[in-house]
Length: 468
Image (cartoon, rainbow, N blue to C red):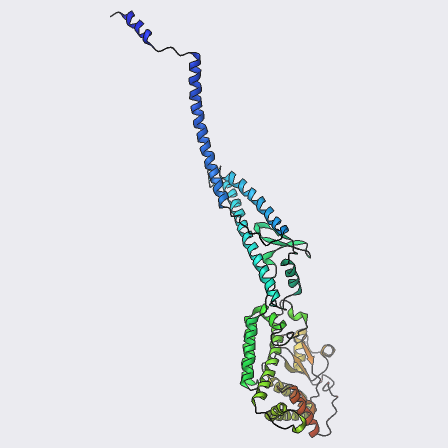
């Protein structure tokens, strides 16, 4: 075989040699393909990131209903939403680029995203609550359901909140806030006191009780009176402070309510004192109702003998037992002299207290009162301490106190002559459950049937503290 001939044939049939341009083109093609692959991978990553960010954005609920708000209030909320949404989008974009979910930066951004999302939910909830409260307040106000037991400041703030006068803002965590002119700061809406309504539930129970007592046709005494008082006390406790304030202030039974004028009673922390006063007032009302029911249930007496009405005559006809007890009580006055004064006055106080065991007003003797005074002062008996006692409480044989209060602050002397039978008769009658007209009848009758009544000027008992 001709080696040279074969070699020449290979050369002749070989493909054309690549030029410089061909090599350059192939290099560009290979480079472009590699760059395209890199670009595709980068785009895929961007798409993944964008998709991740879009997922975060879609998960953000910015649906805060600002309808029915004033334009100024709407602007405040809208500005907050725009700012927080921008911060949310920035955090979402940054967290999408972090692949390690355990890194501190990831956790920080995640916390921020969740916080903004939660703030939007809080804001939406509070705006909805505010709008509902506003509608309810205006409706309740128009229907006269707002209780007079509300504090003036609460009513004043509510009038601004719900009549578009208040300046609205958005606080930390999406909390709805309103400008407080007095404190010159924003207050959280959730913490602002809202006006409460009249306690119709407690009032209805009270009215039913009043109706039942009238229908029974008998006066309130003894165990039955104690039971009624406890039932009434349960109503007051069940209603809480708002119910107590409502029953003390709103006109459920009496026009204008109970007419309590001491502002200290309504101060926070004085619920026990207020409850006792309200309890006493309603018990007086229920006692009057019972007495009226008893009079109305008895057959009406005809004729006007004695110069008084049939109803009064009916009461007098069935109240002789009270008058008899008052007469027996008055005889103790003859024993309240000399060395027997202390023991007799103590007996008198116990008898008067037994007339109504449910009463919060308790009669005590001078000695008992002075003992409590010494305990409160944490001092031993001395002439100076006795003088302090007289200066503060006066010098009486008997005092009236409220066991639920400090006797040094809530006690007063009773201007009654314990050694005068007529004075003690009147004292007993005035502490009974009789109507005012019946009390006056018996007191006048006693004066007509007795002669030479003692001079009623010994209001200070012995005039000294020798018998303590």
